[in-house]
Image (cartoon, rainbow, N blue to C red; front, side):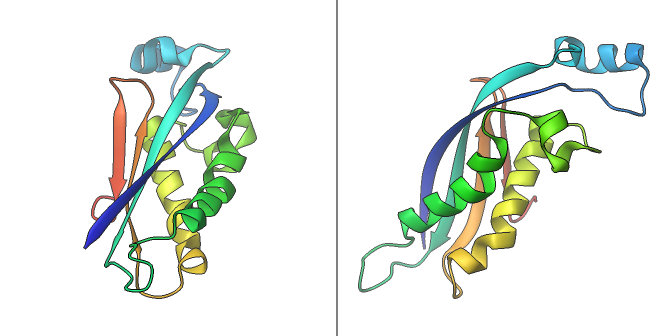
Length: 143
């Protein structure tokens, strides 16, 4: 098996605030990330797929097909958005980067078979860096 990873970037803002908690509890739990006006990140994501080499092309994945899928399912819906307000996924869930990583993995997985008919390649992992120190991964085993 070969694992292929492609990198993408997008910018978005969010506010970490749980509706079921008081303002003081939210401030204590999320600190500066609970700023009422939100804050932004330049997210770097990596999408990894794995599969055998296709004999005719010598590749494990069609990178253009992956780029189209990521554009449709990730970049268009999230780039330059205020996640709390502009994303249906975060109307009820706190837009932590953990939840964002799970949402991205789910969106890609849901449309994967239409982008890649057949048993291979499979979506292996989504990795998202919120900052150089805060990096989150979702894979088929921990999704």
